[in-house]
Length: 467
Ligand SMILES: Cc1cc2nc3c(=O)[nH]c(=O)nc-3n(C[C@H](O)[C@H](O)[C@H](O)COP(=O)(O)OP(=O)(O)OC[C@H]3O[C@@H](n4cnc5c(N)ncnc54)[C@H](O)[C@@H]3O)c2cc1C
Image (cartoon, rainbow, N blue to C red; front, side, top):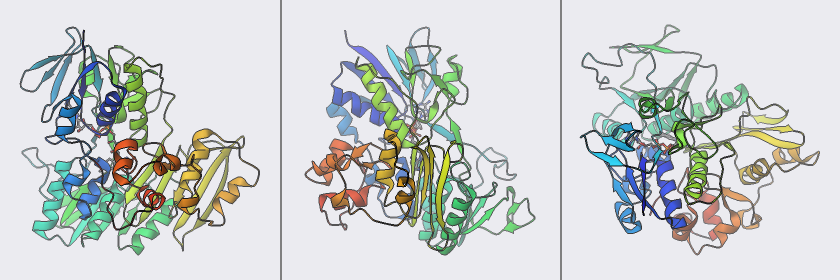
């Protein structure tokens, strides 16, 4: 008898899970229920849509036709309201019930609203000048505001990865943009003060002012008031002050939830083994992730598990790449908390900062800012836990001996999001095959220049996500 697999959420983790299940040719009858009205899209490239470098259709990851051809039922605009674990059914907003044998929660995360007075109007809606930036709908609303209202100034609240992306996109659109960050430096969750300062300097060079150690407290008719007494005059405000796993469904279903839905090594809820969770909404041990790399790795593990192939989740290999024009950032592991010896080189004038954390001769974390020419090699050493020679950590940072992509060894990882090596890229006949067979370039897109060079493709040919 066919077994019914229901996936709630149709974001980046869910689409990858379906791709993997299709590739494994399993006998699951798969239904995907996503509340957004469109087929899945590359969330990372929303800032590219805002910038104007990508059209909306170019960030679609899989079309409705692809699902139909694969025999997967895709329902968009279908919000799941509750899970009835007794009857093994999910309930949609309109009261429809859909039964499952296995359920996967891939509900992602939701933005947190910073405590700023005046953001919410009396009717409960966001002030018209205030924007979130999480979904395609948010992106299109902000895009329309930039196009139709011709704003001169914008303030981005939150100096994390997302804030940097949005600020870059708005400045590229010609809006004078300022970033307000409560911590004492940018990307404070990922990098150290020196790296944050390099980024601040880079942003200033690119025309974006940065206020760190300052919190926005009130939206007034004069602008956004900060707790240091300043008021920033502004025409629009974008909130990028972090998010948290979307766990309301799991909580109501009685599953164990701490920060995320608590899962075991099979990504199954520790409360109900017939319910899995992956991506931003899941928590394994003490760890929630929040990046596409681990979400896609989890999708591979869960697909193999559901296909009956032995597969367990070892914990995240957190590799985060920032997609923002003019800023190069990669963070491996947790450089701020990892214990070990630190080798670092910072050149604020050039806008580069590289830091490796080495424990027992192995790379356990790294920060690379301003120059990602070694990111493939460094990621490989990190992933494999390769024992480094005594001088190797220093050599990896200095001098800048660029590896021409044509010389990259076959086993060097080029795409950190999908874990694709230079050899796998070389074995493809062109960009289309790279996208469809390996999924390289369809995540953060940071590997696109290297992929083009490996294939000997003209850099004028756009590498867009999706098929
Ligand atoms: C603007 C932006 C830029 C980013 N940039 C980067 C980057 O540069 N690098 C990086 O590694 N990561 C980045 N991320 C993070 C990355 O996008 C996420 O880690 C990744 O999308 C996680 O995938 P997911 O499927 O778990 O969640 P999501 O992709 O968020 O998908 C979850 C989906 O579930 C839907 N859903 C939720 N509840 C329900 C329900 N009850 N019923 C039906 N559907 C539901 C949501 O609407 C959403 O469509 C970025 C995120 C954002 C928002």
